[in-house]
Amino acid sequence: MAKIAEIDENGWAEWVSSRPPVIQEMCKSLPPGRLYRMKPHGQRVTIISYSENGTVTVSISGTFNAIIFERQVFGVAANSLEECDLPEAGEVLGALLTDRSDIETFCATLRDTGMFKRDEKTIKGSNAEVSGGPLPPLD
Image (tube, rainbow, N blue to C red; front, top):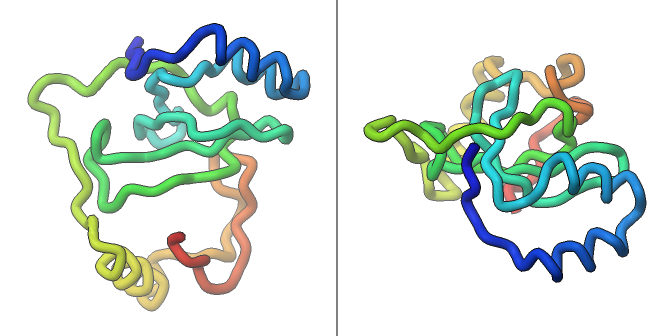
């Protein structure tokens, strides 16, 4: 399993002890500084934050994946993550689009062509609800 960052164990323990019990449990099972794989998609992710509803916000980056664009995803079910290893040597990695305007154009094209619909069902493997309407800004 890949440990991608060192953390101050004392500072981390102090912070975790000040959090609600649900967050404490999530921190035990999904510590930061590790690389995780989203079971439904296979993408490697890092944890950005924990939520009291039992979900996490993750970063999907080109550092550990071959993706169209980097993003943060919220509402990911904690049980949809499993620790994983670093990418293999020679594995293709990176983000195809890095400029914000290119990413916005790409997303708009997907919406306009009907390839990406926001009014489908709940995202598979996540507690996040998909709602109709335009995509939110990428801020």
